[in-house]
Length: 149
Image (cartoon, rainbow, N blue to C red; front, side, top):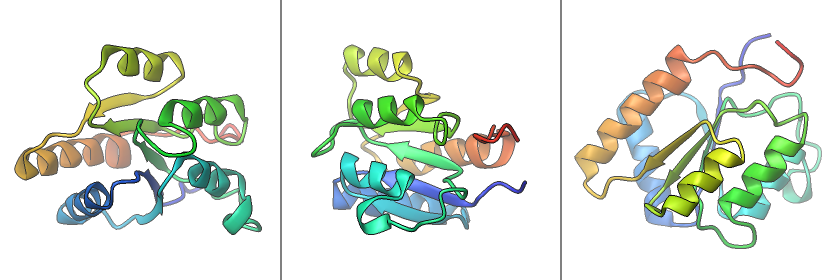
């Protein structure tokens, strides 16, 4: 099965959403980018609930970029629910956050994050970080799908 080309970006800060999207486009990431503004919206998208009812759940995102500090449900709670469900258990999740707190880092990995990246403040550093993330997660990494393929 071919890997689906969607990236789910979960972030409530409009500036960070725009910056991340610009950084991805700067390096010619052609994947569709779906934006969820809070943890509940992210889960609704992943599990086809609410505004996303009827979405083809067989086509899950290739990558989730997940902030920690979110309204409704925080990133750690979203990650826990993703890892607890067979349909989303193997989707690569990169915690993309401003948090430098050790407890957030530990909680993210304990709950199954694949990577933890602190957003650089400087735009050029952020662009470079996104490029490296793109190269690994979207080019080099081979994801396992929930159906074992």
